Length: 166
Image (cartoon, rainbow, N blue to C red; front, side):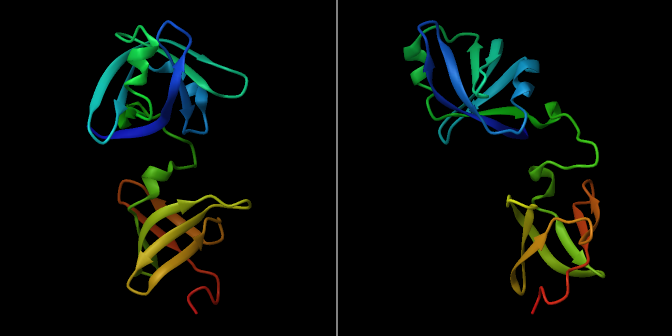
């Protein structure tokens, strides 16, 4: 199953098996619409039904999951990642999720510059880290630079600012 990370389990909350989750998403409200989640570690992965969700004013998420009734049961999942099936990720309008961009081939004038390996968040704008034959290139995520993004085709076309490759 193709899944997306949306949070990490921090600790038990209270005595009834509630789980405190640090959201790894820009929209913690997405948790309120979930029916199932995947709890994942390097050694194990399990799918559980969501019974209740609450979000505190600081943006922390608290989950009540079917089959987890005590703080001791929550402890078994401390540090696990909270994932959802990629099919449950709502589409964005005129924007893209990082996971949709990472892995794209990046071209300038039909010349392959490399593969977008990571999106770096900076104060002003994101930067796309592109790994290619000439090493790493940091491409600013600006409308003046990024000309076209083809998510299904896994291709990005750019016009680099003068001097960026020098």
